[in-house]
Amino acid sequence: MSTNDIPEEPGGTGRPPEPQKPSEPQKSTEPQKAPEPQKSPEQPQAPQPPQVPHSPQPQPPQYPQAPKPPRSSEPAQPPRAPEPSGPAEEAPAQPEETGRQRLAAGLWPPRVSRAQLIVALLLFVLGLGLAIQVRSNSDSSALRGARQEDLVRILDELDGRTKRLEDEKQRLEDQRKELESSSDQAEEARKQTVEKERQLGILAGTVAAQGPGITLKITDPTGQVQSDQLLDTLQELRAAGAEAIQINGVRIVASSYFSDEGGGVAIDGKKITQPYEFRVIGKPQDLEPALNIPGGVVQTLEKEQATVAVTRSAKIVVDALRAAKQPDYARSSS
Image (cartoon, rainbow, N blue to C red; front, side, top):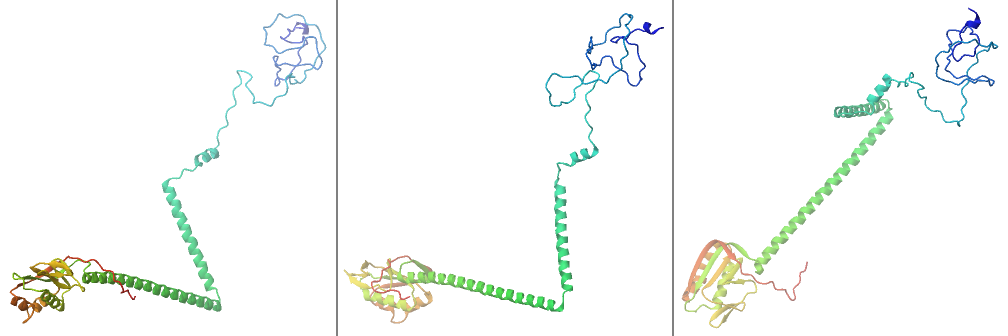
């Protein structure tokens, strides 16, 4: 078969085919442009069905040229990611994670449990103790390597420091004892003041009192008992140790006085009527015998046709009060 009888490939130029390397096949669908304009420029188009062969016109041989990138009429744009050009091309596969990346993702962020936290704390304490032990050992090693003069000086400094600390301790102990003593003294003085005020209140008749004592009741049906006889009875009771006395609701104090008024007796200007009742707080064993001595109060009142009754009691209440009188001239000397 002659060269003119060889059928022309679709889309060919009509030139006889030249031997080509099998490793570099030329695609008919890829657009190519010649360096010079030709009569019929080739455009990329889809493959067409084969046509009836015809006798081609002889043309000079042409050599294949390297394809050039197509010119673009649009302005240059920033590079974009490559997109698939056809259904045959697949999307690029994602890179697989390496073992180091998976290990880092598993370890960060760290997940600390309570047990791990406790173990870390124990390790910290252990390390701190070891550091202190090493430091103390280094100090001991330094002392072992010191000279005798340095050791003597260090010992003297320690003795002086110990002496100063002992003196400071003793001084603080003395201050503590002084404060305790002063506090105790102040408390004791306060208690004594309260007790003294109570005692003076009882003597002044400004506070009520109670305690063991006697009750003396004088009945005078004939009205022969005079104020001087009642005053003698009061003096006898005071001499026997009476501490608080009340007669018919009138509190007896140091300034009390007796007087005869209208066929009766008045105490501090307040008239009282018989029977005369004495409430006396004191030692019953001393008060009663003082009234019953021969020629004493009881015998004198009985001569006046009066009846006298003395009764001991473990609790006598003296509740009559007197208002405190402000002295006009006397002042405290302390």
